[in-house]
Image 1 (tube, rainbow, N blue to C red):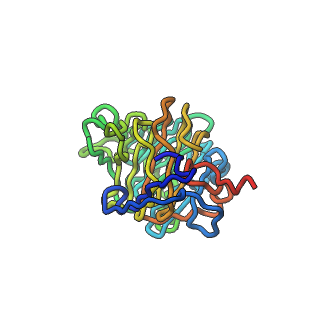
Image 2 (cartoon, one colour):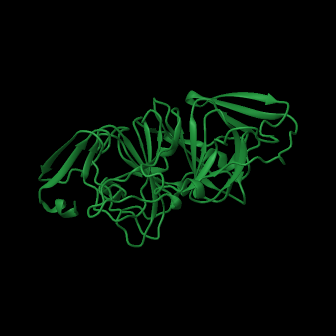
Image 3 (cartoon, rainbow, N blue to C red):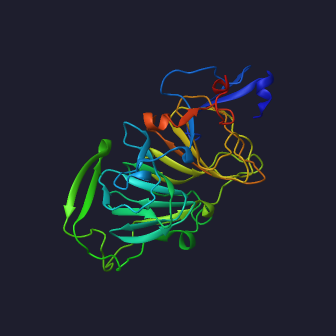
Length: 347
C-alpha cells in the first residue's frame, strides 16, 4: 500500500479480528481511510514524547511513576523519570510489570536478586516481587507496562528470535544489601490503591538462593531479532505475551517489508514506542515518541523498511486504554497515516 491512495486510486482496507490472526474482510475504497478532519472524545489517536513529560517521581523522591494510560481490565502504561533511588520498596499485588529503559542506567534491587539495566533493556518484575529502582547517575526515563495476567517471553522462533542462553539475564543475589532499619513497603493494588507497611528491616536483604530460578530478568531490544517473510515481509511476530492473550509485545524496529495495509484492528489497542533512529519511522523523529491508536480506528502506519535503521517496540492490548488528563496535557492529536501530529494542529 502506498500513498497513491491519496490521489484517488482505489485502496484496499482490512478489517481483522485477533490482529492479523483471525477472520478478515478486505474492501477497496475510493478515499484514504485514515483521513479525518477533527475528532471529539477520548477514543482518538494520540502521540507524545517522553522528554516532554515530567513524571511525578522526577522531582518528588517519595512519588510513584505517573500513569499515562489505564484501562478497566487493569492494563496500565506508566512513565518514570527518577533522579534519585526510591527510598521505599514496592510490591505490586495485582500485576506483572515490564520496565523499558529509554534513557540512563537503572539499578533494580528485588527480594529475589538484583540487576543493572541499560538503555534499551526490558526488565520483567512479576506480580508480588518486592523491588526498588533508581538511576545509576543523574537521571533515567522508563516506560512501565502493568499486566494483571502473567507475562512471559513467547517468541514463535525461540532459537532464532531470542537467544535465551546468551541474551536473557537474570537477577543475581546481592548479599551486600544490609537488613537495615525500618523500611516502608508500599503494596500496590487495583486503581493505584496503596497500603503502606512499616517493616522492621529492608525486605530486599537476601543472603542466598536455595532453589529455582530468579523470576526477574532483562533483555535488550537490540537482541530481539525481527522476523520477515520474503518477498513481502508480512506482519511482525510477538516476542512476549500474557497468559490470557490480552497483551502482546513486538519488536517493531526497521526490517525488510512492505508498508502495512490500511487497517481496522477490531480487538487490540496499539501503542508504539519509537525508541531512537538514526532513521525516522514515518512522522516519528524524536527519541522516545509514544503513539497510540485505539481499536476500531482506521490506520495505515509508516513503513518499517528504513535503510538507515531505527528501534521501536509495539504493545497490543485488548484492554481499551484511556489517557490520563496529566498525560493528555503533554500529548497531541495524531494522524494515522504516518503517525505525525494531526494537520488540524497547524491551523
